[in-house]
Image (cartoon, rainbow, N blue to C red):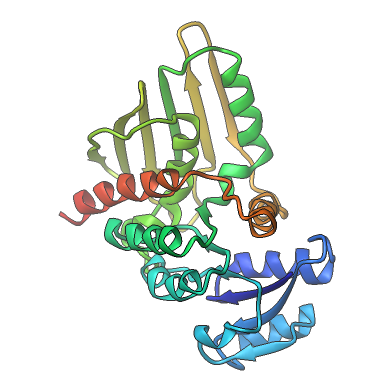
Length: 280
């Protein structure tokens, strides 16, 4: 499988090239082309991974690749970069977040549906072994009453503000709390933003804490049922991108997205409410 990548400044691209090209661990999938021309960054990636082609514009990947990763740091670029490939029927993985507005997210999903092109998008934290273990433990406790997820996020960050890192705890929380998303309430307290909503019958609470120069809080999630509490710090290691990458590769081979399309939209709707509040 020939993979093309748009938006190569993202550090996730290093992990993808390492896994697929350097380790040859993707079952025959390989990054063969990068968009963005012969920048210093792209030349480094090409040398490191033996990438065959550097193309100037995203559209130049058409005809060269079988599937595409859209990995711009700023989700505001994702609609323009993803939709042409979906219109061409190619499998597309939009690295987190899917978009920075609900309208853009809905347009991306609509293009996938209209052209029957497999699409997925998610936070890498959703697929961490710790997240899987927490989900399994919580499933054994019965119906979740409350899900709390916490992580760092900077509302004033240059890559879509709260969307850039906020997608991690939000996507994780909503994995643990399936179902329709209700009204979202957002409150600020010092360096923290707390957003709450009902997802199905579960109360979801997400804490987003602005990092400092000294560091940032770890990702953490907790599931409260009627009789027990399950909680974990969600450890991010050097291979944290790989489980999500493998989910994309499986989609590209089978044509079956790993997540329902509404599950791509729920975290964007949640974060859009947060963004409106912190901008106000």
